[in-house]
Image (cartoon, rainbow, N blue to C red; front, top):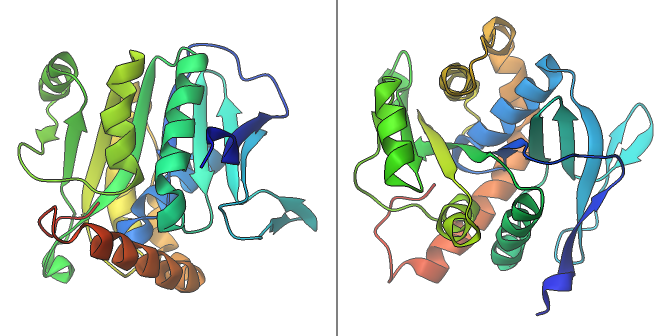
Length: 249
């Protein structure tokens, strides 16, 4: 498959040296919920989208107007990449590589991936813990200096794993923020925890009160997407079940 099967189309100037925040559907839809809420609070505007025949033939309607389901939004030096559809397992590699190449072209200061990490008996946790990962030793030490917990050992699987692996090859630094989450149940509370840690990382105070208050509404609205995402996670796990232990992010 040629790389051209996935491309990023810019409709407005993005500029150089952005901090790129990615919110893709994964465990508990944590990344998508967090990034969507953040983009709304920051009043980000659409500046581009991801185009590919590998993605489902879907558009998302906003005020009656069609939008790509994988959008790029911007506010100042912050850029968010948000997918409102489950990324098919067959497209994960191409999508991840395209994001990294585009970030390199933009000379991104940092890529921050937001996601969840499935834990048993999540319902017993009043406040999910957030763990951080980074693609360089220096970045890990900086995270520690900010008081963030580090995911010392384990495996990552999916688009964030590939972004984390490929980013250093392009001279980019990637940090992952992963909240304890339900595996197949939308988890706004985990998304709120991730956003609080994101705020520490980028020096912004992010008010997550509304996100917590609308938790049940978000869970109901996201049920269908969670089912589709769970299907792709299952397919991804089946493809890799002999290679990695069952820690999927």
